[in-house]
Length: 376
Image (cartoon, rainbow, N blue to C red; front, side, top):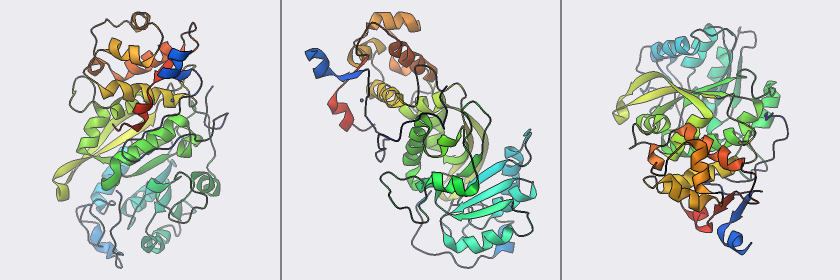
């Protein structure tokens, strides 16, 4: 059984900006030439001024009364109460642990505490920390405040992390959070707003961490509750029925998680809605043939397919694997005419596992070096 605390290899690849690209194809893969011969938030430069807290409760949550970047955090008491009702609906654990990303003035933090939840406030701007800490008085330890930027957690090649940069293993140890088996319950929930200027990069980083059981996912099936912009929401939930938004991210996130829309909030500064979604990792994500140790090959396969998404699957199979293409199609019950754009996310997982379990081939995958330098 695959679990976050058992036998997981250290990170072997890096996530490259903008594409989440990583290609280290391990055993069972070969380069084609070798086979023929015989892998929101960008803060502005200002510092917020002392906060007029009493006035924030009735304001729209995007309003910058404390010189915050628009959309950085929740500043409306009404919106905060709505989110708390959504997050706690039909929940059996009234003292669920929440990690709140960049809470700012703590409007949502306070609403969560009043509802009985335990909260860890991860705030990257130390200007807000004294006020956040004051919210925890007389709360019997239900609130902990940490100077930390969640969206920059566990950077690659970071030997010494200085706040607000932090390392999840050290943070979770200090918080007393322990790893649980993958198929156990949800150990904690993370709530926040994806940084507008780097949403796609953050989604790729989280995706790699999820499939490789590293960073926060070393501790189990951590649930994300995040606001994303309209474009990213459409991408995350797309399938062949809405092909204009169907993307590598659509497949990888839907295979890994149950993605559910919880709430829509108008966001006037950019004249579009923000979508509050829940991304819960699937208990059934890992199998005998899809594991944290070969997830990079799965990523490679999906990205290769979407490089020519209107092409036929059979044509991609000739480039991806030495395994007989017609045999693969019969195994997954697809005909020769099916195109990549017509395949649903779970079809890609089925395709990958079918190739992985082929026993009559020394090498199951082929790849071009040029693919390693291509961006999606």
